[in-house]
Length: 115
Image 1 (cartoon, rainbow, N blue to C red):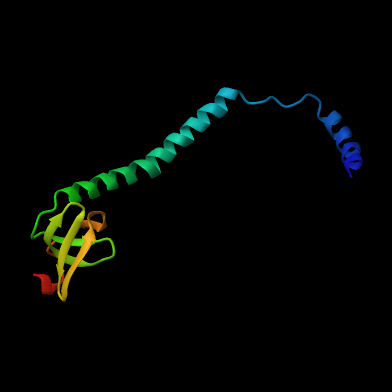
Image 2: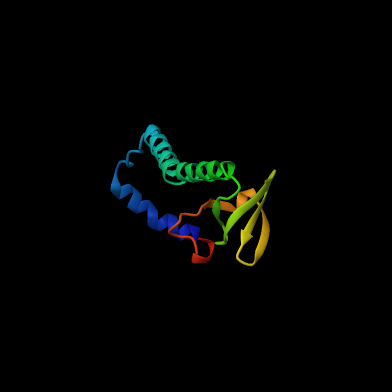
């Protein structure tokens, strides 16, 4: 098979004449840097910004704040001990890790029973 390819490609290569010019190595380097920069600004930077915002909310929690967990549970902060937060629900209490809290609940998005 390899011999057949050589026989077919040899006359084609001779007919084209000079070999095509290769691109500058700087062009490929610049393209790679631009792709990495685009990747950073489109994916990594927004994630870091959102993570910093979540950490800011988690560190500013106080007893009595209405919160929303990452799983969609609304509650009121009852106590804070280190990384554990106890939240009051309609039917009892639940202790969660501080990292589970996504944001403070706005009054418009709270269920009627917590108002």
